[in-house]
Image 1 (cartoon, rainbow, N blue to C red):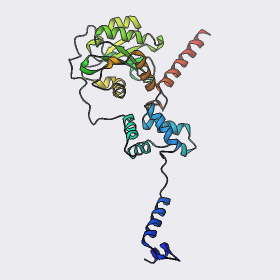
Image 2: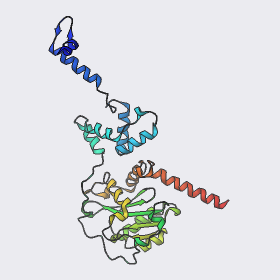
Image 3: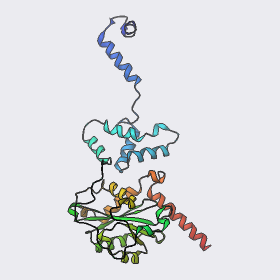
Image 4: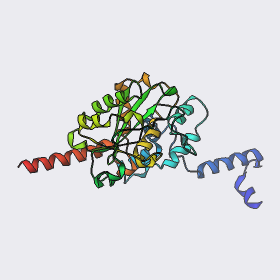
Length: 301
């Protein structure tokens, strides 16, 4: 009581309840540290810019730490980014910020409610005889493939993921037939340098029925996973989940032309990845390409 009277009394008016409460609030506000991500601050605007590029809070946090290792004022943890978004006042901007976050699920749902994609594929070669260099991810040029389907399974996008660098290639397809898969995957793989076309691992979907023609046209050896074993193509499964941020389930994927799909792939390939020590897939892929070029130069000379 004595401390309260001494702290909040004035020589002119003595102790006044309202002024005492105001002084108490002022002291608390002064003692509370200012939020690192203030909505008007420069760091907040940097974070928002990277969110618009579809970077995750963790990718943003790690990149800022690498860019400013000696200046903690210019970096922030991913937990702080999440908290700042969730604490943002209600309104249209908060809705936009929440929409930029990747939404996780507590369980994995079935891949498709449509017809069975598996069927008798002639001359399948099992993943269990895939070469060791494709298994350990140390050497580039080994790919995983899949389809993601749109509304009522009437539209599809082909997905290719390089196992070492996680580089993503997307292929526009009019449907999920073997003919469309052959044409789309052949065209896209042949855009990749020959040393980077070694193997392709796929599930037993019917769209890969013409795998022998694909191998002949591209030089890629095709291997097939066991039935109901999505973990054998873990990179592709993870990528499919990330792609749903851009290609939502239940929508018509046919509205996206190849240029739009290439732009989506560019966004994903320029994101820093924890599994790549926070390099982007493009950076990792280019490093491999430079190493191959140097080896070829050394062989020539």
